[in-house]
Length: 471
Image 1 (cartoon, rainbow, N blue to C red):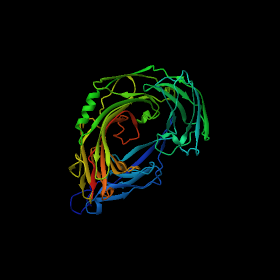
Image 2: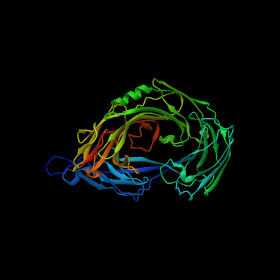
Image 3: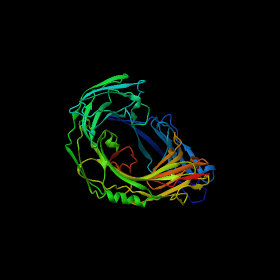
Image 4: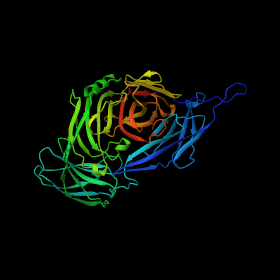
């Protein structure tokens, strides 16, 4: 919660103002590629402001510019810690963040799927695959090219009975897993061709390291992946699905899925990486038993388990439909004899300025003061950190549905937030996503303000509130 302005010391009033202190906020940048590369984020060109409520001024928010005493931090001399609004170099455009923590010194984390100093891929780049197979292509087997560092993915066509994959992949046609324009592969990256059967990795070709030229040949032989590991994780699929019944607004179409990935960023709770096994959880599942192999263990990419229960609802606005959702999920290291309880609370209801967002298409006047948003969770004692994201709803490229455009993301120790009035514009549609997390940090990290000290396991719950309009 924002702290109100502390009154000026009045002669004879008996009130003693607290001593001013320097509040400092910094960011650690982590590039997630074949290895993690950590460095302080250069903040010297990025502005930030501390936020203090003051109902006597227009908008109700006093913005105190943060100082750059060095290139890697924002700071100010204040009466105590205040929320900090700042921007980081997100793609395709910076997203506003508000960090509201009580410590004087806080370091947060900004991790990106990338190798350091990425460069755009050569124009019209191609990959010629000449990959021999350890056995003829069987019915139902699927193949894909996957790169780590440049983070791209593309299915590879294969004919039943073939003993070689000989095809050309257009780099521009590959899916960008980072969401950015395609970046050139370097010798620090890794390129693979993966084979899967029944959603289990069964074959791997690892290309020799190379610097992409634009017409590159990847040649070699695929080797089998032996499923010599066994997931034996205790979980409760039905209990997770039942928890979603408490969401308000209600969601339907509940699904429960799981996957195991070889994750270079496991130590910072990032599960991105080649899929080793995946599936859905049938009703009544209490233990997840599934074989898998991890040929990437020698690269120090541990097998991580992600599982979730999620649901959605379709909202018909005055113009176009939009899909809202709710869910609970957990990341953990995959291991035999493990247990996963989805410990984080699931937000169940939000209020916007005291009004429940349990129904859609409500209309609110344009705020002239900060708006308080609160929510409850079904496990208030287990959650350790809370988040709130505000999205504007805008038409998609096809003009067939509304999509989410990020406006601001907030983080705090309690499920209560103040949204500055100037975040809202008249005649716009918005939706709020409430979040709660459990775990995800090294012991004692949150108490000392070290949000960069991430760790597994990490659990989270989220809920999209009702769609609303500002007029």
